[in-house]
Length: 415
Ligand code: EPZ
Image (cartoon, rainbow, N blue to C red; front, side, top):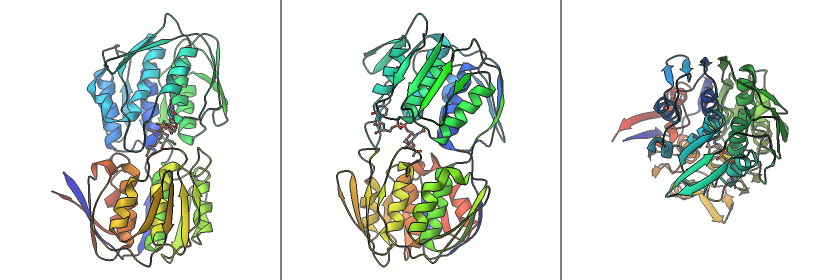
C-alpha cells in the first residue's frame, strides 16, 4: 500500500500539461471491440483504470501494446463468460454494448455500485431491449442476446453518460436508423463518436440531446488522439486557487471547462483563457458561492469534491447541491478532520469557510474525494497523510510528479 505525505503552505508556481481524458479512453477502448483491424490511440493516460480495461480486452483475445501509444487489435476476440476483472471498475460495463454489437450476445457480471451511488443500469438495459435484445439476470450474471439488432427509438429518462455510450456501441451495426433522445452530451462521448465515425460508423448529432445512428456493416482500423482530461485540468486549477500562486494549465480545451472557469471567477479567482491553455492566479483566498452539479454543460459532479475542498477555507458560506449521485459527500468527513466546518443534509452540503485547515491523517474514499484531500492538504498548515491513494491513481497520471514540478511538497511513500 502507498500513501501521500504533503506539507502544506507552499504557493504553486509553474506550468502543467494535462494528460488524455480517462472518461474518453475507457469508452474508446470498449469501441475497439467492434473493429477487426489494428487501431493506434495516442495521448492515452497511464492510469490504473486504463490498465484494468486493457487487461479485460486481452481476456477476450485483444492484442495490445501500450507504451507511448496504445496499439490494439481486436480481430481475434471471442465471446467468453464474464471475467471477475469487470468488477474492478464500473466503466468495464461499457464492453457490454460493444460485445452485444459484435456478437449479438453477451454475458456479464452485474456492475457493483460504488461509494458514490448505486449506479443502476436500467437505462442501458432499456436501450438494448429497444434494439431487440432480451436480458436475463441470474445469480449476479446478466445475459443479453438477440437474433439480430434492429433499430430503435430510445428515450433516456436521465442523460446517462454510460447508457448513451453503451447504446451507441450496441447500435453501430444494428439494421436501420437508431435514435437516442435526451442523451448525455459530455465531451468524452463526442470523442468516442469521433473515433467510431473515423472507423466508418455513421453517427450524427453527438454533442446534442439527440443522436442518430445509421447501421453499417463493419468498421476499419483507425488512428486517434484522446482529448484532454477536463477534470484533471479543473483539479489543478482549483489546487492553485486554494494554495495560491500562478499556474498555466496546458494542452486543454477551454470550452470543455467553461463552467469551472466561470465559477472560479465568481469566487474571485483570476483566470486568463488561451486557445489551448488557461492561466490561474490566486492569493489563496476565495469567496464562497453556491454550486449545483448538473449533466454537461452544467457544473460537473466530478469537480464537486475538489470545489468543496476549496470552499472549506473560502470566505463566507456556500452550499453545494449534488444532483447527479446520491452519495458523493464521503470526503466531507475527512475534510472536517482537517478543521473544515461542513454539514451534510442529504444531497446538500453547507460549507462555512474557515480561516485555515490543519494537516491530518485522512483517507481517500473515492477518486475525486482523494483529489479533494490533496487540494486541502496543499493549503493546510502542517503535514497531511493521505491513505488509500490507489483511488487517486485510478484517475490521475503521476499527480504527485505534476504537483511537485510546480512547487508543491508532496511525496508518495510505501506503508
Ligand atoms: C460517468 O459515469 C463517468 N465515468 C463518471 O466519472 C461521471 O461522474 C458520470 O458519468 C456523470 O458525469 C466514466 O465516464 C467512466 P451516469 P456513469 O450513467 O456513466 C443514473 C469519475 O470520477 N443512472 O451518467 O456511470 C445514475 O444513478 C467518474 O471520473 C440511472 O439511473 O454516470 C446517476 O445518478 C465518477 N440508470 C446518474 O444517472 C442508468 O441506467 C449519472 O450516471 C444509468 C445511470
